[in-house]
Length: 330
Image (cartoon, rainbow, N blue to C red; front, side, top):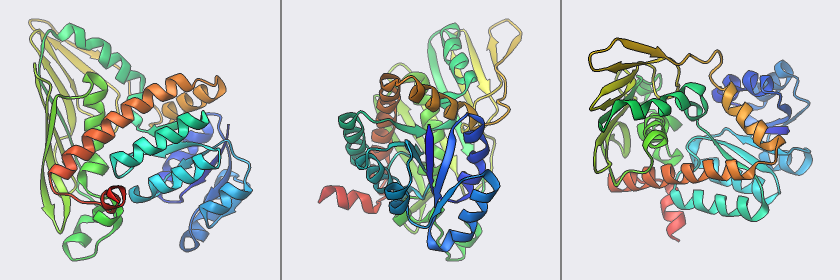
């Protein structure tokens, strides 16, 4: 797979070593005129041949099989659509899009053109996640699920003082739900599927959620998911059943070691922390590409669409509005 990268921010710097370690050939990277120096530096450090300051130029000039879209949330849909319409497959950072209708439109283009469209959501690809899912049957009837990801944002002080950066900008589809909450939601929905009902109770400042709590009703059990960018707190995942419980102390953006506690038994230590957090997902994408396994890709895409719909429903009901909402309405 020859890959182009659209974006030159922190997530690209973090993922590039794992992308290349997965055996993916990165041949081009596009930033913006403002990030031109950073783009050139990334290219030089990682041996990337072609650099651009416009994604259109990359898609027009570079010979790539796929692009990795790693730009602010509100640009995901536009960049992914440009690539798909140019006949190029897409790996898109989470969240797939700002609005559910955008995600549906992208999925339709990908299927019509027989292209790959992947959402990069780390924990669902970790080996420990699959092991965790296998352990659920041992817990008896599931009654309570809790997940939490709280991380005081380095940008929150600036936000409190009136400087609005993309992480807290509704115009950029920022906020706690779209940044951190999606991880807990993806973990819970990856384990249990789509809830019967979902609700988000946010703390909102200047039109954006800085923290909040999701409640998912699964009929036979309840799930609560905390996400916070305005305060610190313990992160992790707990699944409580009638015969025992499962607990991970890692934040939901990762899935490694966890314990299973059975009634009257000792705690069982399971799983292992990944040596490199992003490696497995890019290995999975490359395997599907190499084997032309669009069926596995589209199965994962359906899960991404379910997560997108649930995010969208909760966000809109909570009164958090993004520009994509009015655009899709029109």
